[in-house]
Image 1 (tube, rainbow, N blue to C red):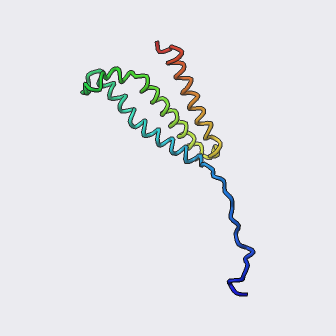
Image 2 (image 1 turned 135 degrees about the vertical axis):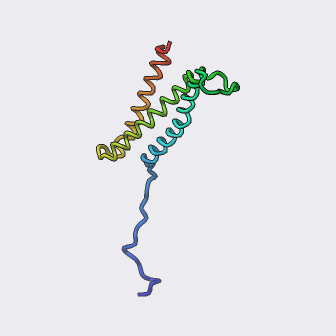
Length: 131
């Protein structure tokens, strides 16, 4: 039989694959973005605290260093990025130790971080604890 007329019975059939978003990629990306945000926000918080005490120079066109340092928006952003970064970091540590599977803690980490964040923002800023 020639190669042109041969039929292949063991030829692989195309496998239909459904697109599946890989949760580990999203967790990695979220943790890296939160790390960059923390890398930018923490020095601003520290520097404006020093500038509010007149220990370092602060440009006048940026306004008052004290108002920037005590800004609720800065504190809320720091809290959000810290919680997300910390919970996804704990997820990675627990996976490395073999305590959890990769899929089992992706949504739990996000829900815990956002739950603590939401309660804290509500308690401090909405409930009126901050004064």
